[in-house]
Image: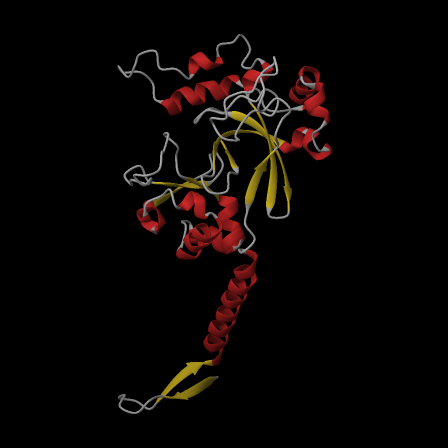
Amino acid sequence: SQSSRALPDGLPFHELSIPNEIERSVSELTMRSHGAFEKHRYASDSRRMAYYAVGRTNNQNDDGNNKSSGGGNRRCYFTGDVIPCGMPFYAGSVQQGPRTLVVFCLPSALDLPRGGIGNNVLVDNNNGGGGTTIDDRRERYLALLPDPDAAILEEMSRRYPAPFDTLPVQVRSPHCWRLFVKFCFFSGLPIAEGEMHYRVRSSVVGFSHLASARGEEIALSHEVMEAVNGEVSAEILRLPNQNLFDYLKRQYSQQSSKLREEVFVRSSWEMVRPEV
């Protein structure tokens, strides 16, 4: 069956016949899209954010003297050592509403990799003269590290009994721990090796002249993308959209202020797909 719609004067025809099945399908699609937008328009006002557990030794050396405050709050929970940019690390996380509690542990705090050869793997001894790339060296380093299992957590508990006992019970399960390689620039959420995320293209100058980049990659967690656009829409979009850029500027104003306006353009981003 068909329905007819009257059209404005001046057109070469007065009515347009539309099959009811098509009209109904378009209406349903419009309502679903509108419903999805309404569902996430207010949810996205809840900032998706990581907050880091502060260990007992975070600001003190073993002799009780204060450590330098440099390096920010991305520190190993057990030793207080700063997590260098590009250094793989263990992290246990528990989501609590829009916030995620994260506990960091550097492999070196557990004398990993075994034999003390791990940090040397990350150094290019050829000084750029035909040496391997940082990604190649990081892959070799990751290959030397065991997955965080019950034995790893038992080692944490044995070496650092007091700090370990202060952790929430949920974080003491090996199911909460993974190996990570980078952070979401905006939310601070850790990003695991092979996990889908987004990053600003290397050809884009991302940081403003006033900000100190410190070699940090501008990466965006897929979790933030889902929080703003919804799980289904995030899969369809494939890249950050204007809705997400508005969210980043509103919810992460301090981090956004460090970036040039070019960062908030869709074509400046690329997807990093999960490894198969």
